Each structure stands twice: as structure tokens, then as C-alpha cells.
Image 1 (tube, chains in turn blue, purple, yellow, red):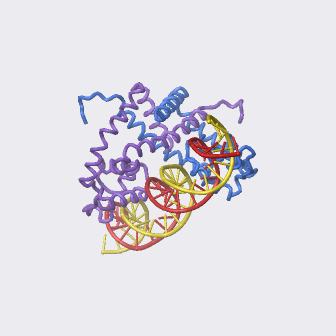
Image 2 (cartoon, protein in one colour):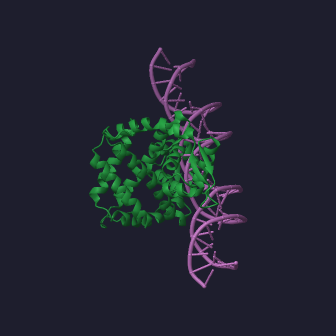
Image 3 (cartoon, helix red, strand yellow):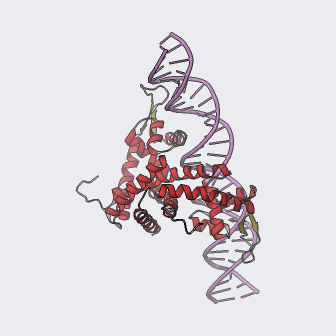
Length: 148
Length: 148
DNA sequence: CCGCTATCGACAGGACCCTGTCGATAGCGG
DNA sequence: CCGCTATCGACAGGGTCCTGTCGATAGCGG
């Protein structure tokens, strides 16, 4: 708008944001394609992975993935209906049952993992690791800046 | 899984994807916060911006933003109901009317622009322009790689 | 001019994620 | 022990984006 006003990275940030939005969409679709043959979607797959790592309550999963409790709750409800997730009483908090993967889910994740690794390695081999690491650091810093 | 197999960027790609997902969510919420006072959302704001630049049909907007025609159509329908967008016959293609911004939408965008510029500049000033440009280039390359 | 194919807007249905709200539980200080 | 506050799962409602499908139009080669 004002050509005499020196831009302090705003245009670059805007371009970066645009890339993030577009990449997000493409990555979600790529992930859907990766796990579609196992009857999963990107969202369910990610929640299953979070349970695998965190192994606890809906609220903890939500915090870990940066989502709302309600969003995770819906996915978990569907996963439970599909027999991929089971809940048991939580001795430490009567309100939030502990969520865990069923054997079927463990098999699914094990089956997806090699395909995911192949896909990620194939994609990653195109780029110098240093540049990838730089980008990860920058995005993480940007994410931190957004929290403030 | 196989510690003897040298990783060719797969872990870094996975980390990068994770950052993109989390950033996408945070950016959407930040955008919502920026335009909420004008009665807009991130999605509507972006579609309005695309109309401003592209000024044409629903299908063109969808292609430009990397969305499906249906997604854009729904937003445009709501924007039209809100009086922010108008359609007129397209002499070149009787199927797809031309979409354009109403004066009210132009006013809205003009009102949002300074706040957006301040926000983007504030965020961008934290980072060296060179690193931002590097990241934009990398993400764009990644996006291109995903199309193949 | 006549089909063939691509593309258009539209509709149906579903997936995902959000805010707002509620009652229940936890956990704190008094 | 007793409130106060934070957090939990749950429900209601809405926004955004998707796939699949349809009839209509465009645009092509014959």
C-alpha cells in the first residue's frame, strides 16, 4: 500500500502463510491416500499415533496435537465404534477414562509404518537435510511466536 | 524401525509435516481473530481476497486457492447471502457467472488490510528475511514435489 | 452439424474441527 | 470439611472442506 514504507518481512510472512495453507491441504490428501487402503483417514491416523505415544486421556491427546478436546473426542468416539480404540477406567481421575489402542489398531499402525517411511524418505531425499532442518526450526519459531 | 538403514530425510520431513499441521491450525485461529471484528472468518476473508485478485468464476477461485469447486461454492453462497459478493452473467461461459465484490466487501477488505499488515510485519520482523525466503522456497518445492 | 469429452454449478452426504455450554469431578486454600 | 476454581467428558450447533453425482454447457475432432 505504501511503497515508501519499508516492509519488515510482512510480505514474506504472508507468502509463507499461503504456502502453509496450501501445503496443509496437500499433505492431508497425501496422508489420506497413504492410509485409505487400511480404512483410515489422516485425522484418525494421527490420533491413533498420538494415543500410541501418549496412551492416556482425550484431553492429553488434544493438548499434544494442538486440537480441542471436542475434536479429539469425536474422532475417538468413531475409532471406538470401529474397534480401534478401547477405554478403561482411570484410577487417577474418574472423569477421564484412559484411551488405548486395540490389537487391531496396533496391527494397522504397524502395517502403515513402512509405507509411511518409504513415502517420507522418498519425499525427503529430494532436499538437503540442512535445509529441511532450517525450515523445521523456522516454522517452530513461528509457531512459538504465534502463541505470544 | 531399521537402525542400520540410513534415513534420507524422512524423519525431518515428518517433523516438518507436523509443524505445518500445527501452524495451519494456529494461523487459522490467528486469522479468525484478526477479522472477527469485521464479521469475517479466515476462510471467507481468503475467498474475498482471491476474488479481489482473480475477479472471476468459482472454478477459477478454487484452482487458485487449491480448493475444490464445491468448497468455494459454499463460501461464495454465504458471502452472497451476506451481501459481500455479487454475481453477473458470464458472456464467455453461460454456466459460470462472474463473481465480484460488492462495495461493502471492498470497504471491509480495506479496513482489514492495515491490521493485517501490522500483524504480518510484527510477526515477520522477528525473523531474518533470508530465512523466511528460504522457508518459502522450500515449502513451495515440497508442494511441487507432492503434485508429482 | 454431430458426437465425445471436459468442465461448469448444483445437490447430497459425510468428515473434521470449532465455540459455547453443561454437570461432574479434582484439587486447591481456608 | 467447605467453597472456589480448573478441568474433565458430553451435547448442541455451526463452519469448512471433501467425494460422488447430476444435468447443462463448452469446445473439440470429425
